[in-house]
Every structure is written in C-alpha cells, then in structure tokens.
Length: 91
Image (cartoon, rainbow, N blue to C red; front, side):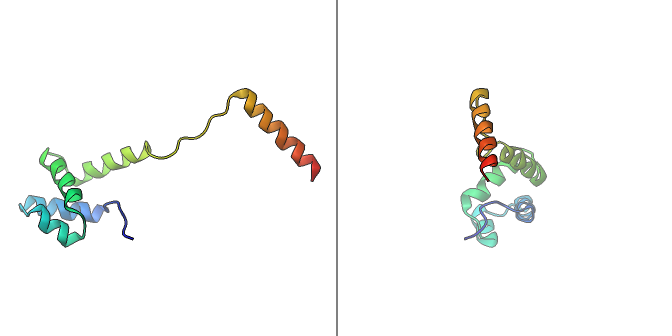
C-alpha cells in the first residue's frame, strides 16, 4: 500500500512540471499518483499559489481531522474517578 499523502518532494515536482506546462496525465504517471490528485494540486497552483502554500493548507486542514476528545459531564467524571479510586484499594 502506498502513502496516500503527497510528500513535499512530490509537490515541488508537480509545481515544476506545472511551470513547464506538462499535462496532468504525464505528471501523474511520472510520480505514480492519480490524475485527480495531480489535477487538484495544479488547480491550486493555477490560482496563483505555490507548492508551499498547498502544503501549509494541507497541514492546517489535517489539524481539524480525526476523532475529537470525549468530554464527560462533571457527574460522570466524578463517578469514574470514584470507581478508579475503589479499584486501586482492592489491589
């Protein structure tokens, strides 16, 4: 299984090919990524951004992904703490 995320090296390669007007299909074959992935980066570059901008946006978006920490209500938090305290005395 390959890594689903683009590396900074791949982003720089795409940016370089973009500046030389290379087709998306050729770039995707060269770096072994799907055409859609390369197209997404190139669309971002066409809007006047850089590979570094793309990577920074990716990092910012990544911070919002994943499971959020569970927050117990105070009464449940006290209940769990009491159970942990009782379990500690049994050992």
